Image (cartoon, rainbow, N blue to C red; front, top):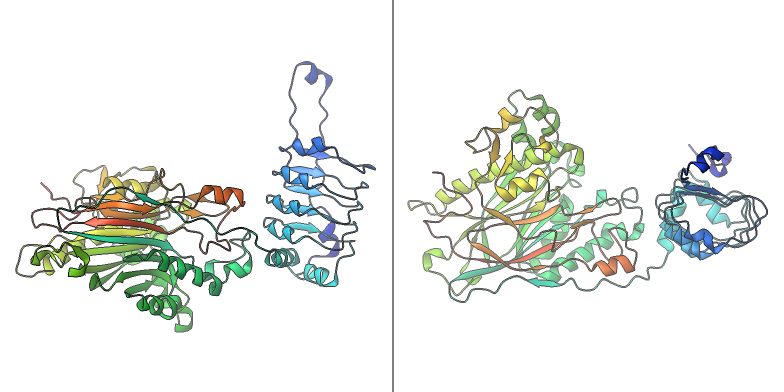
Length: 544
């Protein structure tokens, strides 16, 4: 329903009652703090000192005789409410668009004929008062529609010219030199959440123009980025089913890749026309270096159901989340090695797994349990693969790469579990819920108060190298990871962060951005892999 004209320009939040400090309070040295300022009368000019009051959250300049507003208003960066109603303003400074925390902007009853496109940057604006201004019919028509404020802001932002230069090349950070004395397989590994189309909305990313959120625009930049880095193994998350089969697979096949894909588990219950939009995980590998032996799908909701044993929390919290893990069992080709290893070591098995863990911070228990179930499933896959790779011989150690969007910060239980191989059964991420008896059966630990996994993994990235892999207005942090087997893999170098100076100087408050097609930055590491010898472990710790 369209809001009434009255609702459009009247402030729905009445002025607060001001409290006057008593003489006794003043005499006692009591300090005042005020975050709101009201200047009303016949004011024609504003003191430059006003722009130093950067603590202000509400500024009421209504019912004055102001004919212009200085661009210095941008310094009041904490403003949530700005009332400029009933003045004589003929134009607005473009700098007004820098007040990105504004929730309420009242411009009623001025002499405005046009609005600067920069107002479209006010993506958190909920109330915009424009009544009583001689604006164009097109502008007023858009504003008068249901949800007119958001439609007008979208139009303004979409019309704003992008003057931001493209970001500088991300630096390559060398870590070690390759070995020249033994056979090695050098491979680059990419992990990238590409942000699927159905999540790329103005409601989620209001700071990004709608044309830069459109899949037809973003997919070209995503593919160009993937091609630029020419990784040997590429793990992608948030790939829609149609995008995989109609875009990523045919495009990357031209570049010498082959790949596998699986959507989230919900796709099984959907009609064909809906299933095509379900997102999932994909793994691509360079066909000149690797051959696919077998693919494996890990469905967390199925594992939760199978391991619930009457646990209400497993059924009600873990089981409804249909995230997945996808694994590709590969073997190396002779072309992957330099110099070539012994003939019986040429076809080194490698298990590449990618996963997209549940996103909601309120479900940190679900994240940790999903990763525990994933590690348990991978243990079974590795053991089965090592026995089947060369039948009638001793088990062949299979090396492990684990990449994905784990939606977990470095200090979380998820990353503690993956990095150290153990997590306490009373870790705070379990939220004091009674999972212990259920989880003991999928953990290999012989100790009653901890859960363990049997891999020796290390993360290629850390906070010192890259402060964030996910960069939005409301959240910036590391949630994407590349883990590798420590025994037989050594990182030689990795891709550094987007230049913080570029983000800061160009006021890039979040991604996607016209120059950055996803809200995640791709990770890229070069690894040196040596052949596994039968007597060593592959990422599996032998039990004593």
